[in-house]
Image (cartoon, rainbow, N blue to C red; front, side, top):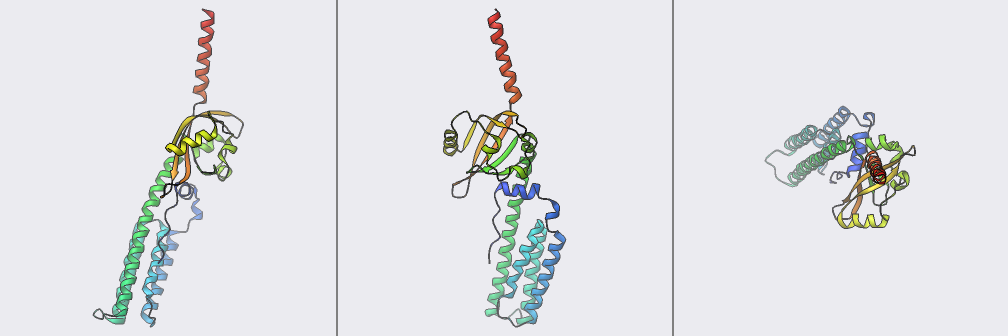
Length: 262
């Protein structure tokens, strides 16, 4: 039995959970109906045929199917239904006091159903957590995007879209430095070296919007790693300090002018 796929990283969950249109998702009602029909078919196959294999293990498919509804109750009900139907089919075919190879197959099926339900519930919890985190990133007042190690953008929040002027469709898959014309306070190689060494980088840099306006940004980077500690991506948070920088420069010029006067 194959375990459910592991939750994907935050950028992909964000695009799926935050930006995915409702019409692109399969109806929960359709998933429940399909799972119920599948379980009924498995039950009839298990009770009306003389197949020697562990037919009841197919209830795992129904459990994984209802996992697509994103409701923990549906997973629990499907697992409980699979267990109940397995016991009923075994009792009708062999009797509860019979012990043999059929008992072993029934036990394997029950174990598979339970394990599949636990993994689906665990996966569901992780997806909900990542979805909540992605929503927080999307409503932040700062420009936030995620890129892979090569610099390709994989997540683009709503504030980045508003300030930079690029929609997610225009930004995703593009190289961040090329799209935004990033200018660094130091050599790019030195910035990357510090990021890899410490896992973080902070500094002031300049980027250009879609309409050609230059922004001065207070930038913070956080390195993302996989389970083996290998770098997989970078989360960049940018705060627009263009007006603050301009006001400070005007203040410095004013002070210099008054010094010359007096």
